[in-house]
Image 1 (tube, rainbow, N blue to C red):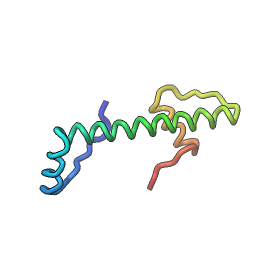
Image 2: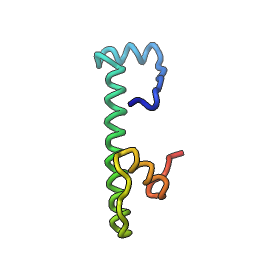
Image 3: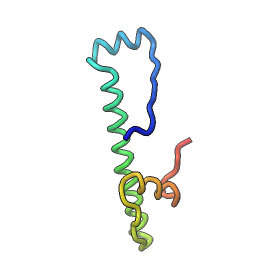
Image 4: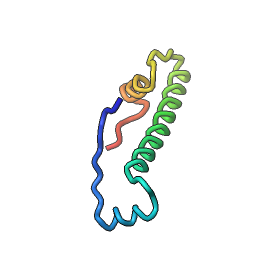
Amino acid sequence: MIHTSYTVGITTAQFKALQTVMVDQQEWIQNDINARAAIAIDDITNLYTKFKINNGESITAVGSTAIIEAAISEGVVGIVT
């Protein structure tokens, strides 16, 4: 499910330069952001799991979205500003 969509603006020079090193810039951007999000999800899941275990608490959040929301609300991780 898509939650947010981003539009990225680049100059003509940047676009033309990228054409020389990749076939599909959109696919590259999508793959890169998906890979970075997957790393963040794994990191948050691990931090939250360790936090709950260290505090002797059960993990009631089910699924990655619920775990991320719980980690944020319980102060395990924060929103970067």
